[in-house]
Length: 384
Image: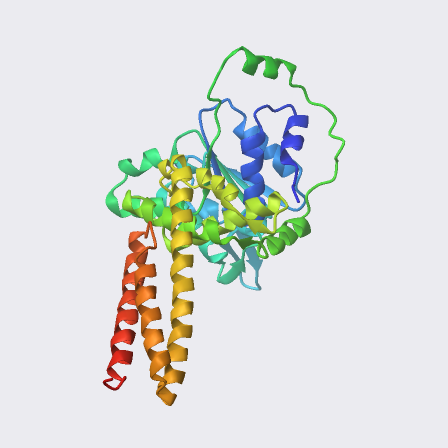
């Protein structure tokens, strides 16, 4: 299934829509908030609004600036007056209906201009899917949270004191982060702009909230093939070694992204092709993707070596079982033959090539078991 947002945006007169559309579809299917950053003038805001127009359900927007407070994230304060026999009592309440909590789609324009306390409240909403307002717990109905900013979000970290920098980094880890700018500005780019015009979109049907929920349900049924699982774990370890530690939350959200990409490609099993979603998750060391072919080859060697060791272990277990059967009968001829087989097995396991460091311990344990079993069996054979 695809939400076909690229066609929607192209029909609305935008160009260079593929990455924007793909990442927005990933946000819809995964349920992970998304942030677009880049220089002004490239259509971030207009494209986000065009997508919102194509989604059914309630939507709202908040334009952020340095005076955007936690109160505004909660919907802003409104006054309510209660009349009594003695006096009118006016109290301030949060306008929950204007907040992200009560809107299916919500857009924060220039989100990173909001103050730190406001972003902290938004982080709590993203994490808990609810907030206590006006003395009541309000559950969030939000399905799509989109933010836009003209600055690189990671450039802000060095400008904050350590106590805020850690929290801010944790806030960013809750987003798919996509750079939206043109990398080239040549004749062909401007020609596409010249030719781009708003045309009637033949597909007038909107994306419904039910379709979004359905896509997330089917996403959960997508499996990860074994090669992908191995490579993903290896890349996570290497990313941490390079200074970009992948937290448990980020690893789980990465799996959501991979499954979402597979679902959008109409695949029931995700493969290494879906690893391109790491480009949208700056928490990962992006340089790892450039060495992906080498990583795939290393994983192939690992899988082959592990398969050889697993097969060897199965054969060893069967040999031990037969030895125990012969011991009960004290079948000396067959026990001597079994010892010969064990000695051959020891030689065979040493021939397993290209053993990765992570499997050396497993191989050595098997060798020790073979040697120990051979010695024990020999000790139980009477002297001839």
